[in-house]
Image (cartoon, rainbow, N blue to C red):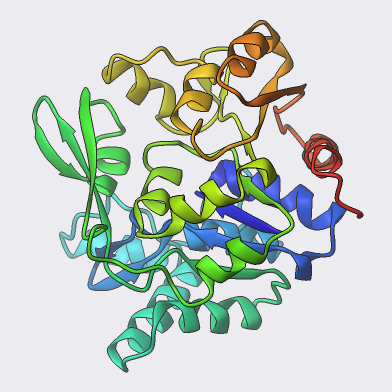
Length: 309
């Protein structure tokens, strides 16, 4: 099974899925377009959020970083006058130091990610969508912003006009990504932002086309519930781009390659609209407050795909 994943929403779902299916059966393709260089270090926020969650290390209160981490290095940088708007814990920094050193040694991101996940005891395979440099650029009414500046530093308050993925047209999928999709018994789009989490993965040459071939075996979970994004700026971005923040609008964005669409019970009136797109709607509780809800949603998806657990 293949999963396309962004950050927190995807990590929550995968936390449940890896308890319903054997973790080794799950091949996770992570978004790297919101990677950034902070304090000279290569940061991969989405890859790390999924990794920390599946390793049992994630901070559930913040939704990012490592549980119980200290911030002494960041505090020291602040005393030196360095801008510390991007929060990095001390144990978190160790991962970024390791990744940056390995990149400078010439290692590929896919191999570095494998080294990190192995060291942390993650049993699922987590790979970047591409080893090539792809960066999300947010075009706003105040100018173009690098993604982390838009999302973290400016707290997603700017009105979004459009989103582009710098480098995507020249990038190739990471080793094994296209093959994994082609050979998968099912592909899941986790409940992630369709523009800045799933969008960059789809922008990599060959990935969307591979999904189109497997359309009947592709299921997407809506990240929009009752007109709101449970995490992140998806609803705000949709409004800014003159789109209605609704589950059916997410389904419309995916309609050329998704065969099954899971939407929350509160949005069940939109199920008919989803069906009119040629997509089979599935209504379920998609709000993952705890492990019970995570596993329940995972079971719904597995059942719809008729996969033996």
